Length: 517
Ligand code: HEC
Ligand code: HEC
Ligand code: HEC
Ligand code: HEC
Image: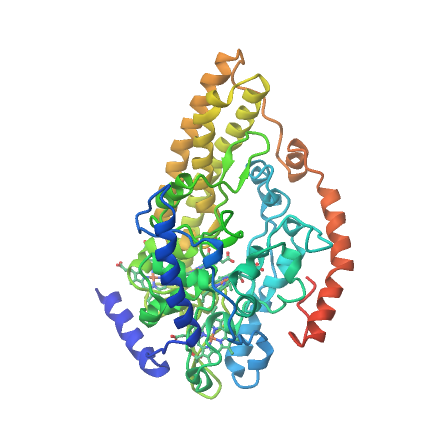
């Protein structure tokens, strides 16, 4: 009760200082109106499956058209007018460490067999590096033309304000169509001002936030869960801007591989799984088990909303973008999004009496507990994939394998949902533990079904599982030639990136290049 009062007082206090009324921007109005119209049509047109919300993804021809709205994507242009916000935003460059995740835990190489995540996957770092990291990661390959390469355009979509700029200029259909290479010299500013603000509005010119969502697919997804952005209160908008990117999504193969959030039945793990099952969607087919797999992305918004803070109206901003006092004595929003413990006095301590050490110890122990059970699930999944491989080798039929493969799909989706949200152990540890235990349940289903198939085909259990103690061993076991991938990437970085940079500079899209590393 006491904490609740503090929260309310804290919000009222800052609400008055900063401002509470946010006006609609022309862009959101146009898009929201258009979206509403297209949703109705999509629903009427397709009746193969029904969703809880009654809504469905829009078909290609109904994606938003180009318009004449100019999105100001160049972050540097706001440095002079808003030095405190700009400089604190720039400090996200201080979070340089991108811990390689699969080298730390080679089981993931097996779990993502046949999918490029098994080549490279790193933990997140500062927003300043979004463009750098998507260029450098092995997952985007080494394309030499817009006909070439493993990734579609959609892969740029959470990297920065050039994305809404291009969507406005080209229309959604043209933006999402084609390969990742297509926008290499266009998407050059990392996550920044125009991703979260309507920088052309009168309010923004007056120093007010004018929070804004300029990606039509995000406005559509929020509508599906009953959150019309323009009608949200200040807290709703503050979290919604993070939901631009920190969410689960997929690329819709029925349209133009455009980004869609699978929230049509709800945002919890079961609802999204049901949706994917109903539309018979898979991200890829596993290279050894042949299971139809789902890749969970980073459902931070979804998991936060189910956690203790989300339920109590404590927003991402309260912890990740606190209000601080500038040298001039005026309060502003700290734009150095990172670990809230680094700014303890202006984050947790606003609402909690406990010491930093105490709260940090609580979070650490939760992280440990979540990690421990997640690894148990990984171990089981590794065995299931190899058991399925063996079953195929000894002549199991598709019909015999069906039940086991579906259970592997579900179990790994649950594992990934819990692993891909990096702050999940803080945002909602209880939710993660529940998701993981349901995953353990499903992997047990998979392995008992596989035991029946293997025994029927005369295989003695347990089967031999290759040694995957190191990443090198795991790549070898999965038939991945990592050195070849690395060499191709190095040549791409040396030969293609300078051309992209040159063009972006010539076109005035940036003044300084994205960092090379
Ligand atoms: C990831 C989202 C995000 C990005 C990127 C972002 N902002 Fe903000 N900004 C916010 C939020 C959230 C607030 C606070 C809103 C509130 O308190 O209701 C804010 C507040 C502001 C304000 C209002 C005054 C204040 O300090 O509260 C200004 C001005 C501002 N930002 C400028 C910028 C500039 C300039 C950039 C680019 C260098 C930028 N912002 C990048 C989310 C963002
Ligand atoms: C336009 C997309 C986008 C928006 C909007 C966005 N993020 Fe991010 N965020 C990313 C990406 C991409 C990364 C990973 C960057 C990397 O590793 O290169 C990231 C990384 C992070 C990290 C890790 C930072 C670190 O130093 O380790 C945190 C924390 C974070 N975001 C929180 C937020 C919050 C809170 C909001 C809303 C205020 C937000 N983000 C809005 C795309 C976005
Ligand atoms: C009550 C405070 C709080 C709220 C609310 C909160 N976070 Fe966090 N978040 C944290 C803390 C603390 C960590 C770091 C946990 C740790 O140190 O292990 C974190 C970690 C993260 C990370 C992982 C960063 C990394 O480098 O691994 C991301 C991404 C993130 N949060 C995004 C969000 C988004 C998006 C929201 C809103 C939907 C949100 N957070 C709401 C406190 C919060
Ligand atoms: C704006 C206020 C606010 C901020 C900021 C805030 N909290 Fe909380 N916190 C709450 C509220 C409200 C609850 C729920 C209290 C209750 O009902 O017991 C809560 C509960 C908790 C709990 C116990 C509930 C659980 O998850 O089991 C922990 C632990 C916690 N917060 C840690 C943190 C940490 C760490 C930070 C900073 C990274 C932080 N909080 C920031 C308001 C806040």
